[in-house]
Length: 156
Image (cartoon, rainbow, N blue to C red; front, side, top):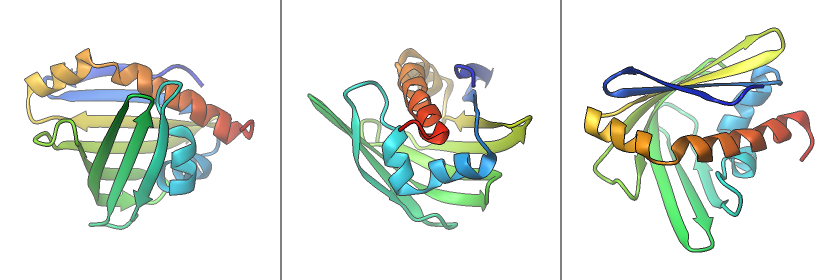
């Protein structure tokens, strides 16, 4: 495992790559089963995910709710394409930015005992992408990925 790598391949895209010392089926399950997602996709210390709903089918929806001592945020979306253990294509809308729907592609590949998750986030404009780049998204996601490291290694 290595810290996430974030790049901007186009004016409207962010690519995030992170590896995990775990087989692809386990990493896939951790991304698609609500009971597992609630255990790792919590962001920085002090954040929790009290609600997680995933209807994993094309056209199915998901909803995540995060809480922390003085705040709450949610994200919703719809699954457009699903290739089990290989690829997800979904939409994402955060309640704090209800007018910005993001198209998210997640690719799962396994090499030499590690699973790589490549996430491509496609925004509606350069301004939206640049706004996201100014947020602490990378820090929150890396904190979540460290929790996922612990989950897939069986230490939590």
